[in-house]
Length: 402
Picture (cartoon, rainbow, N blue to C red):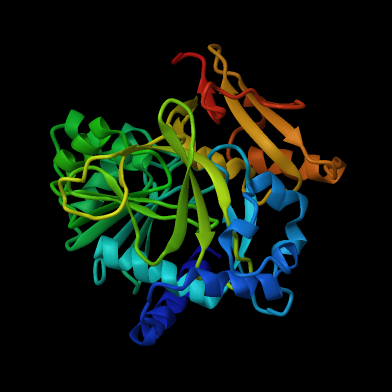
């Protein structure tokens, strides 16, 4: 099944490569997108082409009126799942234009065309009970390697490094936490790996981790901020700041606390499930000074919201973003939080939706058990999960690290 999925994905990407020969992304006119939504999407119907006529929405609004955001005329839909790094999993529909646009913008930024791709992004490569020291699978004929984020330890990383040293012209497509785990192992054991490109996304990239990754892998890190909703994309420049991906979406910034701003995005490339003024509640810090890289537009000096930590399992450490897959695709889960006690017990706090039933509970428990041994975790249902001073809650808390 794993190979079938990857070959299917490879074929789809090749089709997109052909589409991209014809696809010339241009700056979509926002008023035309709004007019389309006003005419075709029930939630926005009759709002017209002025952005001011549209309310700010977030995941709760989307969840409560989910069906009203979908253009029912589309029969073929690509499903995108968000694992919910902040504890709120979701499902979104994308059309071919949205998928092609995403590939175009990422390929242009990462410049990884023709590279052997090492994917270290929470892929479920092996079963939980897998106890061998090899944590990767190569995909024949398409130049890809999948690495398990669920079996990280010194023995498995040693064998991975040995294999990677035999591969030329390679790039790393990873979560920052996974890339850092590999880089830290290399530095600690005085080993260097050569990647042509290190492409990161889905977690906050701390500067100290970036420095270690770049030293261990002998190349510059490229970091992409985005989300499954496809309403905003930011890329890290050579100066270490972030800038909007021109033509990707329309972004607004709402005043937050302590001089920060909340990112609000509007879809420009999705006709099945367009989202207008969608607030991810991710906070950024913006400088009034121009960026040293010379880029125009907002000079975003820091992104808040997705810090990284881990829990400890008998076979190694499991980092934050792979942990978010515990709730990926789970129905009627509003929010969730993972807490590891000092005695290593794991508590999973879950806020249930109104339609959460016994079948959802059985499915959720079985799904989590495929990642974490059943005897190590307990489900605890709560009414709400506390937020911090910035209005966010920590998805993973390791009390032994506090």
